[in-house]
Length: 245
Image (cartoon, rainbow, N blue to C red; front, side, top):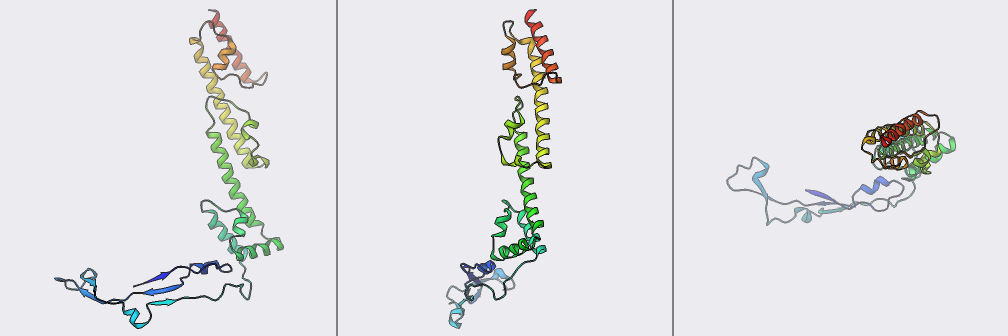
């Protein structure tokens, strides 16, 4: 049998050469048949413990494998746009996925190829692929934050955004998150109103409206004249009727 030793160190110009072995090692020994076997199958045989490595006697037990010194190729290799686009698509499927600059600087060939495309003004499709991928990933993170907002609280859009750079761009992704946020807040408000309405009959007769609002999360900002203001007023009327009864 044979096995490889190590890997070629510090291959900059063709990084794939780093996966090549530095030596091939061979171990060849005499086999003996196990007692009471026919020898017809692999399991009928063992390595003879007294056997030496025959490859050593033949002088080829260890064959070094060396490469020429690492140096730029005589003709600078470049990848075309379609190849770079295909390679980028493959790498973006990995976790974590690289940024455009990380992909560009991964190898000398990538860097040289993309710089050539950038100079020619034809790197846009590849850069857009990375931007779109990471924008979508960031959007999904924001949507997850919306999903994890407490069900019994109402907050503002500005407070939720908290200055995160995702919202520096106004686009479909931004709008999608804002829509999800608004839907979540509307659901929360409906739930809060319903829970407060149901809690009125158990409120102590000495309880103040301001304390009832606080205890049942009704102190969020409500626009005057809005349906929410109408709902809150109705709850207050029922509450005060209960207290006065």
